[in-house]
Image (cartoon, rainbow, N blue to C red):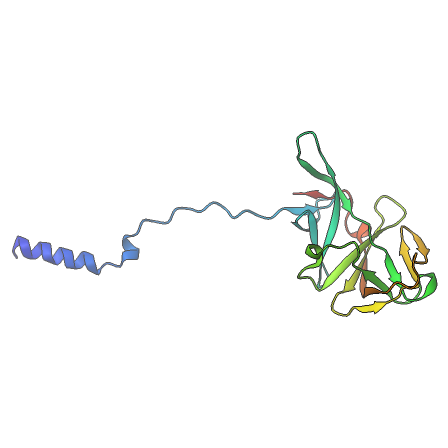
Length: 188
């Protein structure tokens, strides 16, 4: 076999090798960045952090809840080690004395807080450092109602304007967050 024929045969053989076989070996990729997760004082996972809120999954409900945290202003770093549940919205009722079906409203929510969610959560603080109740409202079955009473900060009261109509959403579940998660919450 001539030298010229050997070079031609080698060139054909190399051309027949798939490009993927000649490609450089893949370099190891750095591990994917895991999202920050809120945990309670005992290290129990509460849920992933989403824009300084926490996404909680309870019995099939996926709810984004507000978390209150301590801000450090000396260097601009946000310290989320002493976080607790936000308690801002009341729970509304069609009947006086906070009786009947409870409803949640969305007055204190911004669009980002509930965008893409079928349920909204309102957390009410009770007596005690770890007494928080979550009221889960179904955003798919709201109604325009005039509430006769509202419950907030442990007190049942009458709305300031008893003729004001609101978009309200029936409560489909309640949870004792204080029994489920021990404060303070922190980001891990």
